Length: 430
Image 1 (cartoon, rainbow, N blue to C red):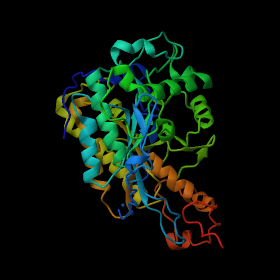
Image 2: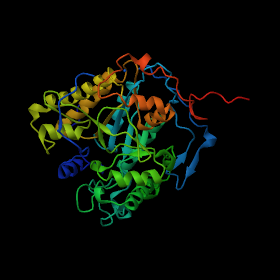
Image 3: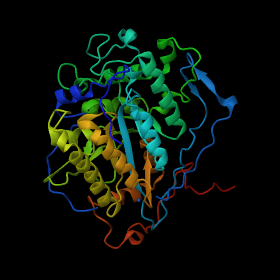
Image 4: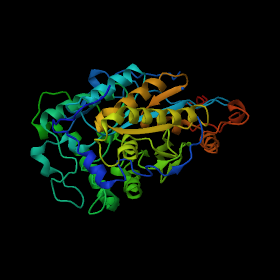
């Protein structure tokens, strides 16, 4: 499937201009700086689906824009890895600035995920829940009221986005945040924000989600079926800027992970109290370097700052991104089994070739044996359930490196007892 021209329903994303201005990209880092590929690099996950909350557990929050409905359906129970067993191959597909517009890419990729037994993370931009006519309600740090580098929405666009968010969450997907105005670079960009600026921005992002009914004059529509204060546990910053102060703010607000950095394909560790689930560098087939696992970064390496490159090269560029992601997957799957983290946007750059690349990647990896295509929340849950000694040992494996004596020997040591209450812990003695 290839997306075509993006028309507006208010969500009209201005990301091309924003990213081009930053040129570090919406997934900045090294767009082409890692020399030398490291060679060639699974499904059987048990979905412990939770039952939907009984009707009497629905509790409206505030104006009824959101509601507490109990435990999220279809959220797998994390279990400790048994001694001698190789870890599953986790793959995370995530979307920056998630919103439903006239291209219907949000709804499309929900179908793709369901068809391929995958769940994903949708990083919602708060301003996509705020109508243009009420833009002055947004008070961005270090900018005038009503300013946003990606615009706002209209009421129909908000209703369409709410519908997709509701369905996505009920299917077991995660709703994170991409904050609001998407300010990059100098002159008040997020890289210059203080810890307090980030806290203010996060509070506003939550408020637009929790008051979309009031702001659109909607009364009868169903609420979003989650408490956003509880649901929101992670984020990706605009252009991957401002990570240090954001992480401090996020830790103080109870977030559990961040994915705003650039890393190699190795097992994650905690950074400033949060799981560092950064995107990663993968080979660019036919080129002598690696780039970030994001549509924008492949585009910059192929057509520069423009998203309207030579149409004759669109198919090749999409294949190149798909094959780069597959090479990254293969070297992890056959090697150290480090989670593969992929980030994208709902866009139509270079004729939608990157949307095709992502879809074909989902189809080729998510139904494979021992592969789990999960959200960041599910990955963080699994990491939290593991023996710290096991994770430390996994982190000794380099990119594409498999244990020399095999997994059974590598992870055969007796693990430390699981903390009380953690999945996999022995039952308490009576």
